[in-house]
Image (cartoon, rainbow, N blue to C red; front, side, top):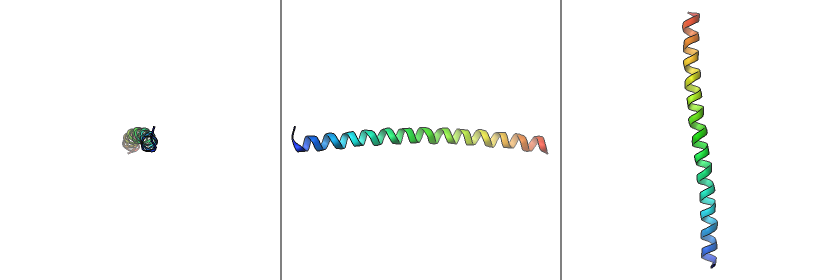
Length: 51
């Protein structure tokens, strides 16, 4: 392996790790958005009950 190959492999590995982190972040973000929407729906129901 040449220095260029090693540098590419390191860069590719870091890119793959970053891609996994982004994927996990987006998954958590979607989950939080769904939870927020459910909580908003529950709050709306309680407001109707209390009115």
